[in-house]
Image (cartoon, rainbow, N blue to C red; front, side, top):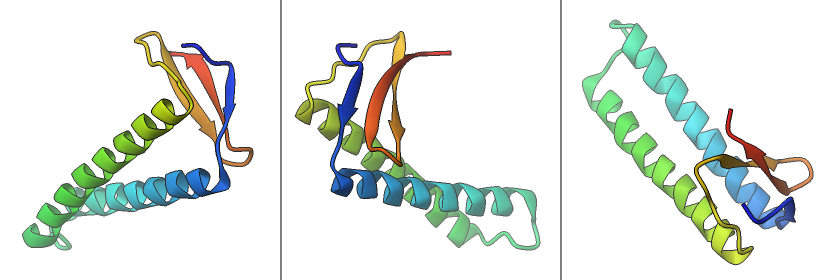
Length: 95
């Protein structure tokens, strides 16, 4: 990694928040469907799986766009963390 800290814009923070909220909601819906046969609707379950895949792709694309914009280079030993309060991205060793 070639960064210690990068400040992103409020708009970029909002984009991450929206994607993460959607991803968390879909994860919860999938969990409910998988663990309660009475509530499981196969059509909805299938839609949730499709939607979470799209959401994960959107999140990956957002990270890629941020990395390009701020000239951040990825490597296998580090990961990026975003502080939603400050909008600061830091590079930390993978655990």
